[in-house]
Length: 239
Image 1: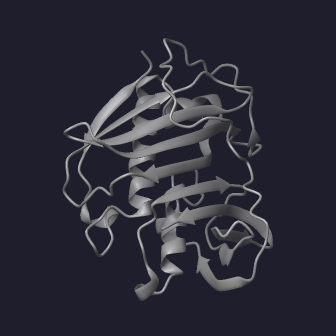
Image 2: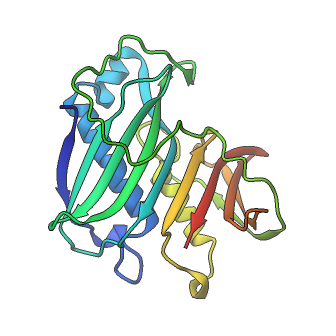
């Protein structure tokens, strides 16, 4: 069965000032589970480098049923779906030690050609086995969220630093959620109960990311990031 399980315990750098796992901490754990499972399947970063590829997350959503807390023992379970034309979909769950579901997530990954920085079919990356049929989220990933428009409520600018980068030498996906959190006023901050996050264009060292917050016609809290006027990411967040 193509399934992977691990135990984690949120640490201080993953939690907010209420000692609850913050959004970037949740995504950090979800990414770690995916990374460790793909490593077990033989396609970790080093193996992909030899093939001239890298994994890139294009879309992620999660829903929190109960917010995990600092130092709580958690069980993370993940399993992939069969490959589509270019995309690799993956389900991830976070449960407590009593098997209560706390967070459920759906992620979409693609393979990028390292030299061309473009999508690769990567027919030589073969993930085969017995796929678990259980599905938390239906439907394909969303390359764009089609947020619509609305009056800009807040604007925040972040310049990418060394600590924002991952092994692909671009901003790690979890970092965008910290940028959004940093754009908020202390008194307005609330935990992110659910989110959809679409990664449109990579951001690299010293790029200036302009983040706009607005309420769209569906009364959703929307965040859109720009690098040199190009959309970098889009997010819908519920508090």
